[in-house]
Image (cartoon, rainbow, N blue to C red; front, top):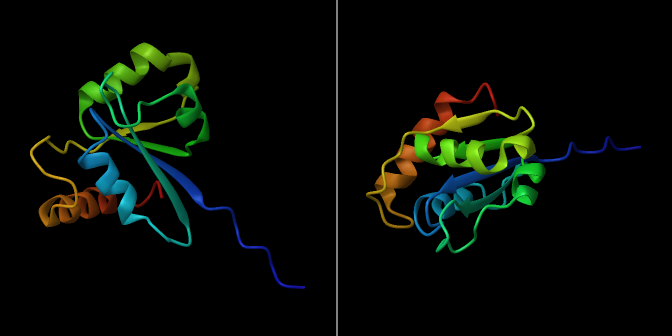
Length: 116
């Protein structure tokens, strides 16, 4: 009988408005056999605003800036339930899909390979 493949790790990427950085990070993992990715934003005008459900779903949470981590802890402290929040330190100066943004995300995520 074939061995069951393991469940994919669930990655959540968060920026402010969920328009450029976090959706770009999410797309990097489209059709990846080992990871499932989603994205959300912290601000009221976000395309998809982060909820407790997102945090509960995620195995790993990556935020673009420290202020995003602070906002999550402030609003969802209990829901984070000891989950590690990794700050990637990627400034809000790139457009969605920008090749420099993709390269920077790949580089930063490689630094955290031990998590993944």
